[in-house]
Image 1 (cartoon, one colour):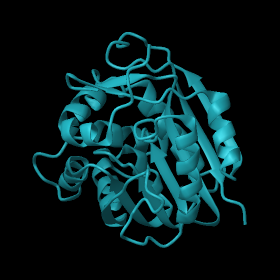
Image 2 (cartoon, one colour; image 1 turned 180 degrees about the vertical axis):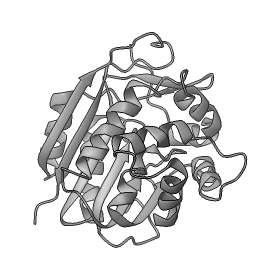
Image 3 (cartoon, one colour; image 1 turned 90 degrees about the vertical axis):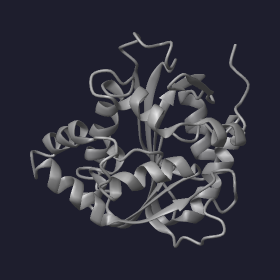
Image 4 (cartoon, one colour; image 1 turned 30 degrees about the vertical axis):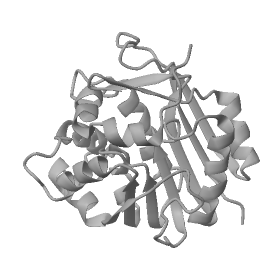
Length: 262
């Protein structure tokens, strides 16, 4: 039986960004380090190269304390705006941006993306390129009509959302409403890229357990269509390594690339 939906305040009060990074992305041990990182970085690399998605501005919504989702984007966008509801996540991201000695070490994942891109540059240069492209770190709230309220963010070429909407959305109706509101953040024909996990009900950050909206392929595609997007590509892969099912119970990964009509 699924756990009750977590309140936004509980999430704000109890989520520890560093615990999440250690649980999820520690090389060789983190639950998201292997399959998830490979799935996300490969599909992002393809989207920003052969997929032809590029432009002036990319909005990363629900950035969390992570950078991996932006490593290929920084090659094809001039300006990246990152955002998260939680102050602790924004602070952790800022640590990396400012080269704080206490920042999480992303070197292993940066190297992997450089290899995907054909060793275009060394990891240090890649990190510096990303830092140079990040222009703002904003607070956001997926459940608001203007998620950046009171800031007005000019419409962007691309909106990227990784491992985010299953947290604030209590059901698929709420998920669809968020997608509808996101259309105001995009230029006509702007791209929306959403990556997340399938059929999940919980995950851990350290010892703290958080509930998730369980999303399924058919429901996801229906939500995009009801919200008025045109789906260009949808990728679903099953989870192969279930050794850490007690840490997070997702059954697979998904990536949906859609665009706003003219």
